[in-house]
Image (cartoon, one colour):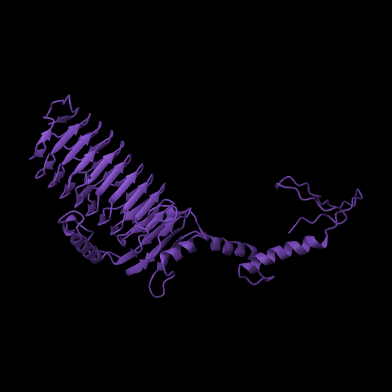
Length: 434
């Protein structure tokens, strides 16, 4: 509607922006002074009533003279159609579900704003559900969204139940997925080499899900390669009891984003083609002391950290690194890895390589049973592995060169190390404190 000027006065010219328009004001009559009052035109009655009645009717309310709160009722009803103001749960997959899949659920969610008092949980039914496209999380209130599978069928995974007999061994991969399906009631299976979850807005929680891939890579028209269980670019996600298996690239590919484990339940990433976790310029936290992060049988490495901060309760890294120069754990370009006691890095081609001013704190841990070295530190790297066990490695327990410093006080070492303990190697430039 528009402003209806007093009868007999010219219409008010439209001026933008709002607040700059000069309205013809109504005046009251005054018999004492002989002042005539303004005459309201018919539109001042018609239009205001029509506008209000339209709001009431569009909210699904039948107008009546007996209720003078109908405009307020209508505004409340229309508000709730656009805003989610309280916790709600929507079901996904299966008979009678609200949505056939998570893509339909995300499309529905895009119509709403979730307020500070609201939240949305998408409950995925037990079973195996197949996707041919990634699930994209891109909502301004993603931090108030959870995607949850059925309750776990058994205890959270433990390292001893994930078979590792070689490097990225297909037989191991088969045994691993059989075991993980015995733990998780809900599996989201992504085919054709696509990503599992592409995360563009931060804060969503994934809970109790087994996320599986087709062990292939899909290349987009712009040359971007998919095939990651989780793909995070400048965004974050929370995980709680999640397992990822069989993606062609990485279990989690994190580019200036963050992956956060929010409870003591285990995070498993197994049998992916490249890295278990590949993180560049980001943050990964799984620091609850009772939690394991299990990275097994991925094609190249379990963890590659380039310029990022990663903090784990306990790491279990096994079955990585065909003989092409890779190690189970890479930390470079100023990255930092911190682990609590009890971490195990074993049965890989090589254990840990740290370079480029990076730092590792991995005390009271096991770094054993590698075909090559346990620890290779180079390029001003700094390492603390005090009281750790480095047994049955093929060539060296520790190598420190080009300005690297390794503190290995109290370590159990079976294979050679270089340089000699407590001796600065002038030629190689490394130092091992023992």
